[in-house]
Length: 210
Picture: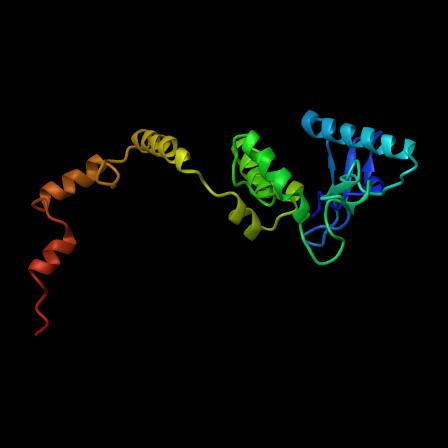
């Protein structure tokens, strides 16, 4: 809803800064998108649509809106310039856009993707890109609990992770049984004590309590 609810006064086109006033955490923030060409291209396309609407005498405050009337079975459901969500009641994309969203996801090779899944994808992409957690949380407007919930792993990441773990343990000097290689002095003590630990000897020869 932070995205769908963006209005043109939230965006500084000259400095390429987006201001998020109504956020999930209740804390306003801003994002500089000058270094993010994909996002800059989206804002430019929406600005072009806004100019077209203005040329047709339609004034809208919404960045993401219908560029033309949505007519279903001969009946107009949404006028040009209307937001892509209901301002009260329904959260997220309008149900009328469900078929278009599903078709777009199938064409992108992501069938079954939900609009809210994009939040999780953004979190995971930033995590994989090496963006510091504190910065990712500030950019996405997430708390610690939210970040942990969104930054879930993928089964395809398990094998490389296990390889990294094995390499680390090998260089760190850990044996396959999970204990660190004993130092030379410790080995000598064990030999002097018959190869048994003090705990073993205490259990085998308990002290006389009487």
